[in-house]
Image (tube, rainbow over the protein chains, first blue to last red):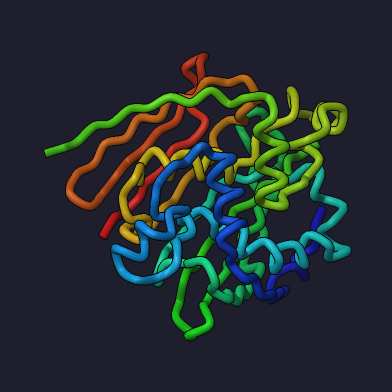
Length: 149
Length: 116
């Protein structure tokens, strides 16, 4: 069982959004939206660089979360970890060339008994991501479930 | 006036590996069957964030992605490679409710988005 001392732990990291990474990401999804990969199209719309899909937040938040997963209290539980809920609030869009800073904090940890009587642990993590202009790009809430044995 | 929309996607057996490569989510429950089964899962499971990304694709289509203001989902059942997922959404003004089910009619995701 994870101790409550995990609550309040904080992790931070930077991530630079690249055109090529966005392209790899949308290729996996089979997503052909021109806002993601068509540079000429986006230039003609607003003169800027291509957009990252909203759920690309999983990528730019990942370096901060990775630091949590490698935390000695947490890493042994990762095999029994599944995603329960995910919530995003988006501000400025993330675009190719952006440098995004993410701060992640474990804000809650509690037990929940499911229908078959198994005790699962729920961990809630909040992330806040800002871009190179100090504009808020995304806040996210991750509710992770450590499945009971 | 509610606007309803439906789409389907077959999750091919390599998708968890491709998504792992793109997202750097290499949790072994997504890429190693023996490991997944030893940890109580029926098989390797698709990353929940991949199902969420596919659901966002269903909602946004070819529109400007910055119109998505909020997006919240609950993961209800694991998605196994080979599953055929059905996405059904209903939009009222700026509010969109979405559900994703597998070929057996089991719901795998329920979500809500707000658009600008």
